[in-house]
Length: 497
Image (cartoon, rainbow, N blue to C red; front, side):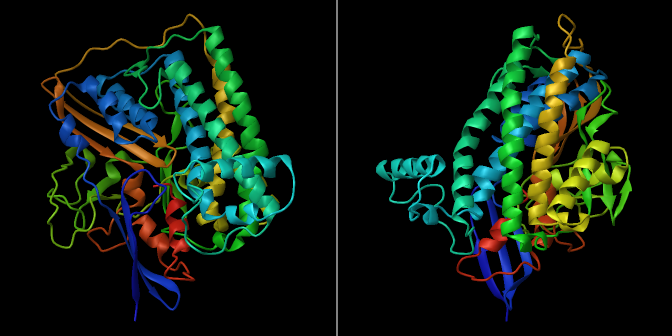
């Protein structure tokens, strides 16, 4: 008989998420992923001035407001019939790129790595080294703070298998502390052109309001150089070290096997050429993206709207008492397929597109060095590896984009607000595909819909009772101790919900 356990709330994520699983013979056989908070941003936006959207929608997420702002601006670009000039596009990329690097570092070191490293082994270790002394000094300061006799955020925690190599633990936690500083530097790079973080002020429809100077470009490049060194010398080696310590996680958390990416980082002003490619991989085959193939089922979602609607026709009226519904997350589908979004999806789509040598070369070389094949990437460790490789690619490209900015050239395209129009804006947040959809009526927002990354990954069952991407990834996961379900937590956090 199946044993049911609940992980609620799932911690170290942005938001409110509940995971219910059923376990038979030490393995998950069924899963429910539930978003427990109604957000209602679409209702807040209705009737407001269209230019309010890019500021309000940044408040959807404190971790990825930059991506929501970018998607909203591209949505307005589309509705207004404009594109940014070269400098506007490049500065948007520099702002979004810095946030991408920061978020990937945040996810690995401060959200996910705590599922693998063991600080208790370090505190009992009698060795002596600068890294060890730094970690012990920080840990002692935490204990002396009086807030708790536990070292937050490493404790409390589930019991389970953690890294056994003490030297690796020391390095990982030392890099955890260094990553705090690296995240700050990435945010400082962002605000050079973005104004502040979170919730940037300078990005607007048509481009940006911030004019570049030589001093600002030099300052940005200085931060990026430090971030490149950290990614190359600490982040990538640490991901490989975790992979070597937990090779079984290349076989855990596969998921649906279908992938979607809107593509990200415009390489031309029209947005038709992208640094990371747009498309879908369904059943192992690449296909070009079609925005009209997106729909949202709500049979198990706590909403009153009709099921299967396209986002332009979407409705976000809550129904918390709806029978059989278990989540305030809709179930988006692409061409009637369950898909995964995020760094792994972007990597797979770019790789399979046949148009991205940079992604193909770094994936092939990394797989060869670690001794794995492409199918092994469809896993918990594959998601961590894809995120780290993307972090390197983006940091390196940011350094190049900064050098392409031309001083004294326009940063924004003028525009007027039409009486009637509609538009869509696509972006890739660090954790996956985000789209904003607007209908302008009487020069105001008539309808505004957001399909966020976690809506794709953490969707409930759809109208055909097919499990969402995270739910499918959980099925088959081994659980050694039902009282300490570390394994399903690792699977879900690999998606960075």
